Image: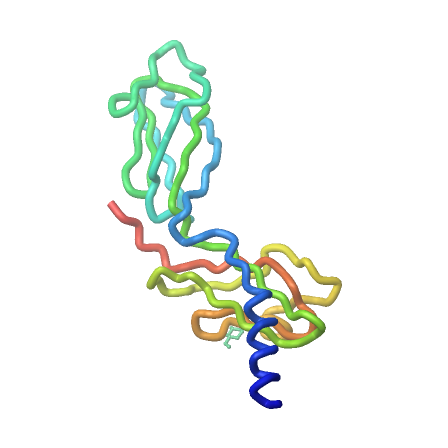
Length: 167
Ligand SMILES: *[C@@H]1O[C@H](CO)[C@@H](O)[C@H](O)[C@H]1NC(C)=O
């Protein structure tokens, strides 16, 4: 009977685990950048370890926007130069992942975090799904490399890792 309960329990826990974004999946964002007075302009993505792609969506300047000579990226930094002004789409490896975790029927659940070996520096509620409250250290907790939820808290949690930009 005990073994059966343990099995049922782990099945419920398994069912509540759904990893939203893997640690390696890039996040994309649109941004306008302008090289005023033909000067170099940089923008740091503080929640990125590295930019993986940068594309011109719409050029706004008369000066051309050419990858490598008037725009580009390096580590978690993007840049424009030589009078290039444009809307860009920047894709980067984020320093965070979203993990869904659900305390079904008010039972506790543990949801593993795909850390990729990185150190966790913060756990925040990203979006509450349940009617029950989700409060840090009251109904959700960081337990090693897992999110623990209790008392009917169900939500999407943002786990932030230590940022070591890669160049
Ligand atoms: C939550 O608990 C952790 C340790 O378990 C502690 O480091 C952290 O400061 C607490 N946060 C809040 C907001 O209580």
